[in-house]
Amino acid sequence: MTIHIKNSQEIEKMRIAGALASQVLDYITPFVNPGITTEEIDRLCHDFMVNVQKTIPAPLNYAPDGHTPYPKSICTSINHQICHGVPGPKALKDGDIVNIDITVIKDGFHGDTSRMFLLGDTSIQAKRLCKMTYEAMWLGIQQVKPGAKLGDIGFVIQDFAEKNGFSVVREFCGHGIGKRFHEEPQVLHYGKPGTGLTLEAGLIFTIEPMINAGKRDIKQMPDGWTIVTKDRSLSAQWEHTILVTETGYEVLTVSEKTPAPPAFAN
Image 1: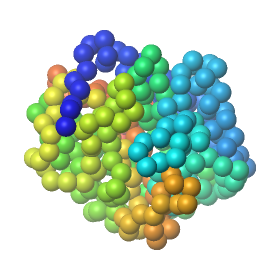
Image 2: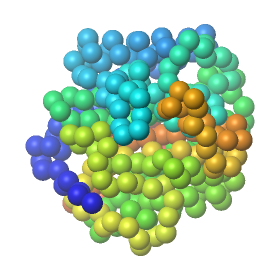
Image 3: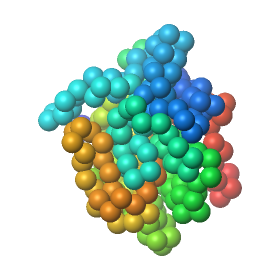
């Protein structure tokens, strides 16, 4: 496993890429309403990235081993879709929840972040799931410091989710990021404290828990990309890109309208 520790110049470029990814979510927020299609959200984001930011949408034509090239510029995962939802012609409706996942490339470096959007009159369960998933991500972020272990992050996320009656998706995880979209290490959202890689300053990775209201079992849809809950229960995900600093952590995917951390993280 080759871990790439970023130098100060690389970290600065990652800050820029992270902020730009977050700014795409700021831009699209007013458009995410009942009646819009995810295809239209994708088009708006694509045009903003390419024409305004002069960034490259990293998902477009991304093709890891065994996959057909991803056909869109963003991922939109609705209700029981866990991740990698492919934007399409179906309109969002009142009560839906949707994760919008953005990854941009600027000057060769990737910025990766996602947010949940709740449309109109969502259920109490949907609100609770989205809130708890956000808190789970932040509990994980708070573990980040030199000398901590990756297992410390996974443990607090899993412990919090399961104590609140939810389950954690295990087949997908956070990841190192930099010049490549997905680098080592893998950042599991479950695990045991004191196990796994020891964190050191200059390491950059995502924390992006996928948490289900029902069971953790997943299914892949025929498009080869979209992942759903097997029991069709709701799923939520939030994502930030994190830098390990000399004293703790820095969230790199921050912009003007980034949701504030939970009270316990301030």
